[in-house]
Length: 100
Image 1 (spheres, rainbow, N blue to C red):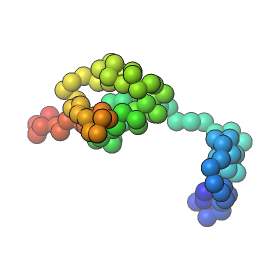
Image 2: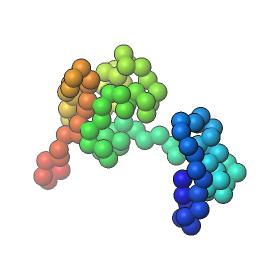
Image 3: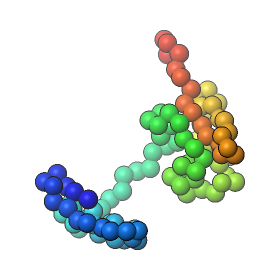
Image 4: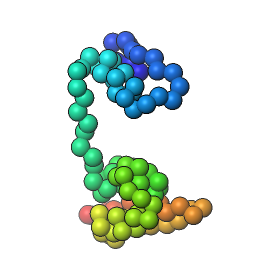
């Protein structure tokens, strides 16, 4: 990890989250880190245009069995298309029509 001055911390191999947080604190020269607020599913889909169910599960800390209900709760059908590829659900942002 490098900061704007190309000073950094080297972390080798898979480490705990705490190790990465400590590395970020060193690189950013901060005592405490504040996470950014989690984006809504609508805004995330607007940025990414395509999201697989596994990405949604991890981002919003939900179970695979809750995906369909979560999507229906967070999005209205005019904003997305839902499909399946190799057994995994994915959603895509619907293209906006001209004039909207």
